[in-house]
Structure formats: C-alpha cells, structure tokens
Picture 1 (tube, rainbow, N blue to C red):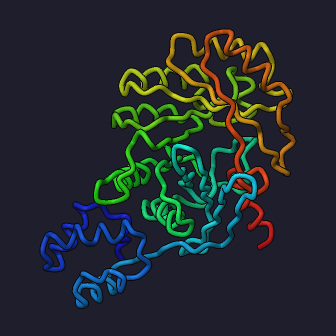
Picture 2 (picture 1 turned 180 degrees about the horizontal axis):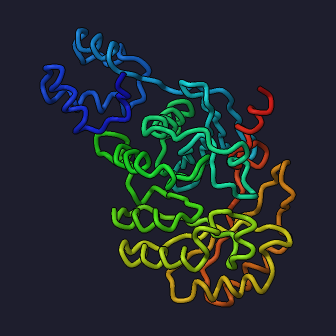
Amino acid sequence: MTDLRSMDPEELAQLCRDLGQPAFRAKQLFQWLGRGVRSFDEMTDLPKALRAKLAETCLLCPPTVERKQVSSLDGTVKYLWKLSDGSCVESVLMRYQYGNTVCISSQVGCRMGCAFCASTIGGKVRDLTPAEMLDQVLHTQLDSGAPVSHIVLMGIGEPLDNFDTVMKFLKLVNHPDGLNIGMRHISLSTCGLAEQIDKLARYRLQLTLSVSLHAPDDETRDRLMPVNRAYPVERLLESCRNYFRVTGRRISYEYAMIDGVNDADWQADLLARRLKGMPAHVNLIPLNNVEESPLKPSRRTPEFQRRLESRGVTVTVRRRLGSDIDASCGQLRRRQMLQT
C-alpha cells in the first residue's frame, strides 16, 4: 500500500499517470492531503472511481488524539498522538504574539541518550514517516482551530538521525500548494551530529538551526550527551562555523541550565571564548524536572546570563510555557508508557 500523504507533487503526478488520470488530478490530490483529510470520500472533486481505486491501493493513516492537555496559564496545548501502529508521539502548540508555533516529533523515542531528556528513556523505537511528521502539524491545526505559522522540530527524536524523512517533510510543508510555511519560520534542533550538520549545510535551506550544546567543555558534555564522544565540542563548532559560512544563517545554541553541572562562572567564560567571532545566539533553558533524573534546575541562570552578556554574547532565557501540564519533551509519552 502506498503512503499517499508522504508523496510530493511530482510523485503524485506519476501516480496519476500510472492510474490513467489527467495531470491536474495530482494538484487536487496534494491540496486535499494538505487539508488533513481522513478519508478518500472527503475528496469530493475527484471521480468516485478514482477515489475507490485510491482506497484500494493507498493509505491514509491520520493520527488520533490519545491524550490532550491544555494549560490554564497560557493556552499551551500538549498532544499525545496515537499512530497507526499504536506508537505514540508528542506535539506542543504554543501561542505567541507573532503567531502559533507547533513543536513536533521526528522519531518514536530517541537513541541519543541525553541525561536530562525524558524522550530518550526507553530508547528509539522507529523513525517517523514524512506523513506522520506532517500530520502533527495538520491535525494540531485542525483540532485546536489555531492556524500554525511556525514549526519547531524539537519534539521526541533527533531530526538529523532521520535525515531523509525530515528533508522530505520540509519540502512538503514548505510547498505553496500545501501549508506553505516558509523556511525562515521553521527551526530544526539537533544534539550535535556534526557530519549531518555538514550535510544539511549543502542544502542551503533558510531555516533556523538550533544546536543543543548544554556544556562548553568535553568532560561535562560527555556526561550529559553521549553524542559528544563521537563529535567533541570543537569538532561540533567547526561544523557550525561551516554551516554559517555556507548558509549565512546564525545558529542558536540551546543551553539547559543544570544545578552544579554546567552553570559555573568558568563555564560561562569558556562558552564565550568558544563562540567568539561567531554570529551566535545562546538560549538558556530552565531545566524541567524529570522524575527519573537526578539533574535539577540551576539557581544561577541570571548570573550566568549576565556573565555571557558582559563578554559580548547575545543571550535570552527561554520563556516557560505550559508549566502546569506535561509540556516538556517526552513527559506525556513517558507517563503513558508507565501506565500501559
């Protein structure tokens, strides 16, 4: 069976040719798929015979809402989506003055093993398909009634560990006949797969790359992020410098503030030295408590911020949304796993 929603317009055009259909049917199909239809019967401007043939040979596997939490504080909505094979992934809808952002997952689980992240507990189950990534955007929009203007690939999974799927998803979501969300409204977060960052640079996309750095020294980063053993800090930053040279896009460095681990003055100083001469933005993240983790939120975030700024680094502290629900990555899925 063909995964229809994962197909781009060129692939749909070939499908229509194979079915003896005129070329304009491909555009009709793509537009229907971009509306998040749940059945072929909803495609009312297609001939019944074609709809019947598509139903015989193609799949539409929209997700269902397994759980939904809505913050009474800021309207943030957390979705736990159940996929066709019973797996679950998370998305978060966040409301800002400039528009609505949805944070989506790229894998079921994650194999990166970062010490502070609930998503990696239990490891990676499988990669998502382009359709399963796109459906998170479409069905968040349909369920909430809130038009999505921005996308963040920062949910469950490591996007660059599912590289080809993510590239296909970006093509689909950016297409003018689809959701038409511009690349500059899309952020992609990576734990630091340096070779994949080099590969991404060659695409010259105008998205925002966010690198989860979380420590400026190898000893600390080795403890927090196993990926650092393959790509130490300086090797990672070499790829980041190259990424900026090729794309002209400033990189955002994510830095979760962890009490007594990565929040010392000397680490702020080293981080400033590492980033000197690079167009960079550091986003300090108040750590979310994960029950299974001994790591706790830092009490030194303001001091750390001031020290970086005094050394010429552009710094922000991430606003915490959905603090009254399981809004941080992996928590709702983990709760579901424990219950079932």
